[in-house]
Length: 149
Image 1 (cartoon, rainbow, N blue to C red):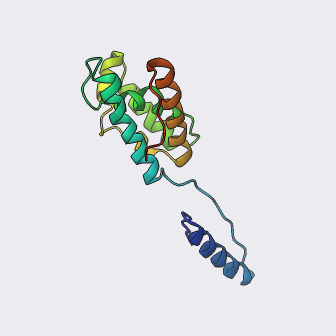
Image 2 (cartoon, one colour):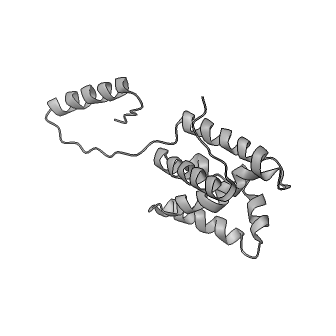
C-alpha cells in the first residue's frame, strides 16, 4: 500500500486506511518520504529567477536565464550534496567530474534545463534554496525577495 498525503483530506483517508489494516491484526511497517517541491514553491522560485534576471543579471550583461543557472550551481548542488543516498551522490559526482577543467562561467552555462537540480528537490530542500536566495540577494545586491501575491 502506498499513500500520498498532500492535504487534510488525504491525511484523514490515510489514517482510516491504516486503521483498517491494523484491525486485521497484521504486522506492517511504515516508511515516510518527504514529497517533491510544491507547485507554489516552484512558481515562486521561478518568479524570483525572472525578477532577478531583470534587476540584477541582465543589468550586469548576462543573458536572461542566468539567475536560475547561477542559483542551481552555486547553492542547489550544495543542497543536494547533503543527501545521504548513494544515487544522489553518484549523480553529483558525475556532474562534478564533467566540470573538471572548466571556469566558473563555463560551469554556470552548463546548468541549463538538461542538468536537473531544483526539479529533484524536496519541499525542505527547495525551502532551503529559497531562504538562501533571500539572504544572498539582499546582502549582495540589495534586492528583497518576498512572497508574490
